[in-house]
Image (cartoon, rainbow, N blue to C red; front, top):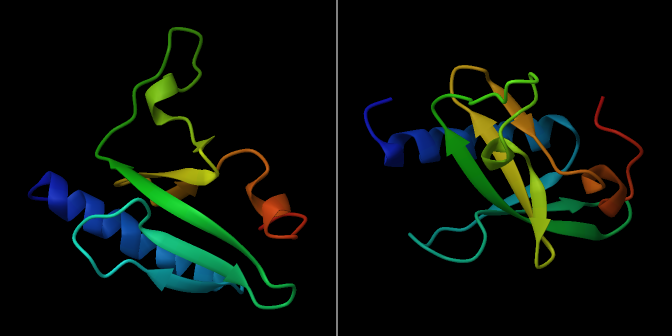
Length: 107
């Protein structure tokens, strides 16, 4: 990736693909800025979750092997802060994410 903007765009696109593969509808924010990047919608029960994607080029670990709090997914004001680590090709969602969509799990 050449820049932070490229890493962010890659993270959003990867997350879109990931959520689509789980059977969810995905709506992207087409504006350059805004409070959320995506809204995922479960067409089977009408539940939806607003998502802000945070993309990182690398991960920092604590001494005990856990993720640094900066890289942990979480909820802020009802918005799911979802993490994408470039190169790891993995989307990390906060606890309770799948339940909020009325799904048991993504796997």
